[in-house]
Amino acid sequence: MPDECDFERDSEDDVYADPRVAGSPRAVADSEFALLLTHDVDRPYKTVQSAYHAIEHRDPRQLTDLLPGNNPWWQFEEMMELEESLGVRSAFYFLREKHLLERPPSDWLDPFYWVEQFGRYEIETPEMLDVLDRLHEGGWEVGLHGSYDSYDDPDRLRTEKTALEAALGREVVGGRQHHLNRGPETWDHHRDIGLRYDASPGSSETFGFDRYLPARPFGDDFVVFPLTVMECALPDPGEEFAAAWAECEALLSEAAENGAVMSALWHPRLFTEADFPGYRRLYRELVESALEMGAWVGAPRDYYELMAHPDPDGAAESDADGASADRRDGDPPTGRGGSQSVDFTAGPGDRTDLRPRQVGDNKVKTGTNTESTG
Image 1 (cartoon, rainbow, N blue to C red):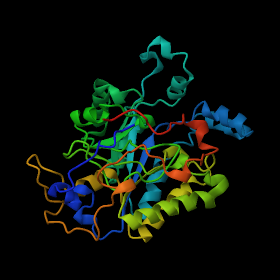
Image 2: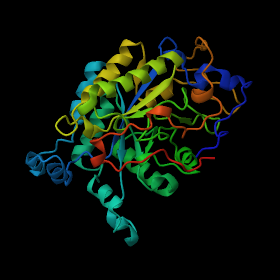
Image 3: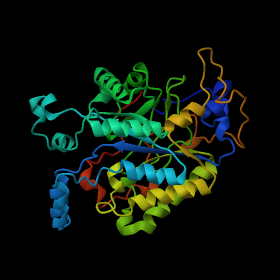
């Protein structure tokens, strides 16, 4: 668990009092809050899961997904069309998980690694390269989804970043660790290989705000965007859409009330309506409502680039248009969602009992990471 002092800063320090540096760029000063949209590309291919779904849901039609040319979990085009229609962009974090044969023999009997093996893909395939190119050309962010063991393996993490940048043909700015893994030196590794932000802190079983603004664990230009909500932590919208939407609506209201930077994660395969009914609709309503409420909505990279960052001398650099920023009404929040002393692993109170009933069959669930980052 992170120490309470992990992100503690001198409240008298003018750099951290600057709202641009604290997390409120001038470019979004007129917005009620910010909503960062992210997608972890874990399993873009439906393979053995077809047989599992056929048995679990007593639906033999699921077996047709095993036929050549059928892949209902390939949702990139649909997602881009949806976000294009809403006038927003998001981040897609791509994963290069180890092949089972790359792991020590002791891992071969672990069912967890077989689950990861069945979801593997290579970013160098022609269809993946085409998706990367279309995402970039369309204004979406392509980021790194560090593999399961990379959170404490800087060489592995660097190799994955290099491979993704080679496939993309340009630099990667940030990303999120697979299964939200973090260790004592994870952010050091991220910064050392040239990543400028991380979006890992969070949970797949609970949701809510532990802080309202991004954090700077090193006091420099490396930024941490906490995850506010992962779709699988919500009530299943296929069975309880009203309950799921009520939780999203409450998060949006809390974000608006506190001028927060809210972050949401929707996995691409959950846009497959036949397998995961309700999740596509829930995502659309989340984005539409945020826009109607006056939020800035976009990818973490785009928000990061709007922020001002401390220079080595401790002064705030100017924001995107070079003008000085005016403080938003009220200081950044403190306490549970504050910009000073924060524990990222604090649970969201009475929401901890909510569990999905469908999404978990295709994702190894992880709770809040408990390893110290201090």
